[in-house]
Amino acid sequence: MEVQNFNHLLQSTVKSLNIEKINSKIDNEGFCILNNLLSDETINQLKVFWSEEFKKQLNEKPNINSVRGNLHLGEQDFESYSDNAEWNIFRSFSFYWNKSKSKEHKLTKNLAAEINCIRNLIEGNELLRGIKYDESCYGIYLSVSHYPPNKGFLKLHTDGHPDKGRLLQYMVNINHKNIDYFDGGLYLERNGKFIDVDAMLEPGSVIFFDGAYGHGVSAVSSKTEIGRLAFFGIPTYFVRKSDIPPFVRKLEKAYLGIKRRISK
Image (cartoon, rainbow, N blue to C red):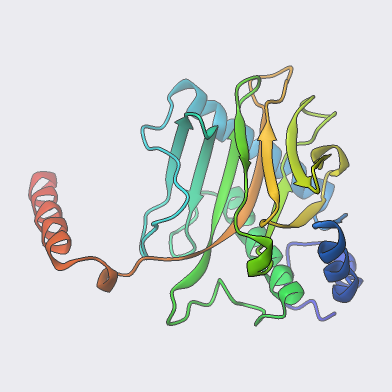
């Protein structure tokens, strides 16, 4: 496989990928784990950076709730926290049109974009789909998640239905079960059986899975204040200004005008 678009993943692993076998495994088992896509050095760099970022949020929780959609073109990056019946999670949202706040942040965005290229290859799409925007406003954004020890979780859910085709997701653990935390973690539900995915993931692994099947995150235990850390490049259709009703746009313009006058 050509590797000119993969500058941050281990190119020897990318070259050896067998897309046909990956697709077959996902079709038959619901998921496929690719080992050694990220170097140990990269994983350690991300672990140090994102652990510190979420330690700050533990001391002062973000006042924005985590969301699963309705994101606008031109959104500013934001941090979020939710604690309800669906999930207990800290999530960092980053968009590719915004400037990265550090070299580690930029590295995470680059890795997510390159893994998205592999997802495109698996699905038979144009390599840069999701990074190169089109008329449909389809694109990806970076989501980095922290499930705090003992209480962080994501309720079992699906991202689609098997009879409507495969919805391919991926996930990269920044820290790892039986190394940084214990118990719980990401699981998949298939044919009535629960698969402990986190126990299978090594440092540098990436899992691709069919989001149409049940999946969730159960609470982990940790010897530190940091629980489970992971990142994804999440596909979505961004909302355009033309999608917003005119009266809402007028309210928005009035608000922004007031905000500019106050800030002077």
